[in-house]
Image 1 (spheres, rainbow, N blue to C red):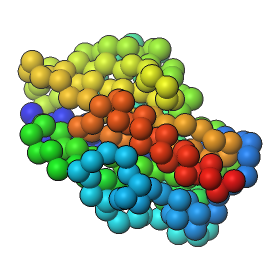
Image 2 (image 1 turned 30 degrees about the horizontal axis):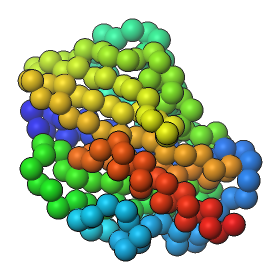
Image 3 (image 1 turned 120 degrees about the horizontal axis):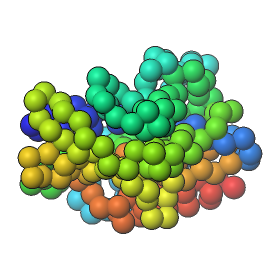
Image 4 (image 1 turned 60 degrees about the vertical axis):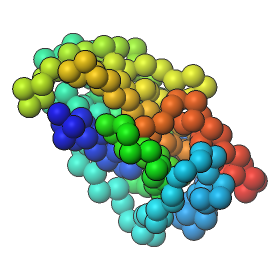
Length: 219
């Protein structure tokens, strides 16, 4: 079962990495700025986390996601309400051209949970719209849905976040629950986005606020 839940987490992670798009207002960060502005290990507001290497988009490159790269992959082959399916499909970002994008992961030292403590932080900018907007529709249209994966019955619950744009995905399986948080804030043409497992929603807000403050300090 752990492999099944981890596979769902990997799907959400891949969407996040390909979807960090900003709005249409405000100054755009350069590729160099998106990398330099990412929180350092010393600036990261949670204790016991180790910073990994920064991943950057190459200058002039285009998004490489397939058109079907979206949260709809979570319910592929499943019978769910059509409105929910359409909402999940609306999170597809395969056609976006990223102007600049950098990301870094922070790994926690708590090994007791089924899903590892991990916070993937993305700072990016494009001429497209924010990917956080369609996530609100996912919350409205999907709510709680039932699926079956590898013979295991699962409940997927999507809920809005307190103080952030995005969604909190709760996976219920075999009397256990696993949570992933995907959200952030839009700052003009820039988006600060986080995908987190093994941490509370309150801690995700702390990370986003710390990153937003550093982005705004570029002024």
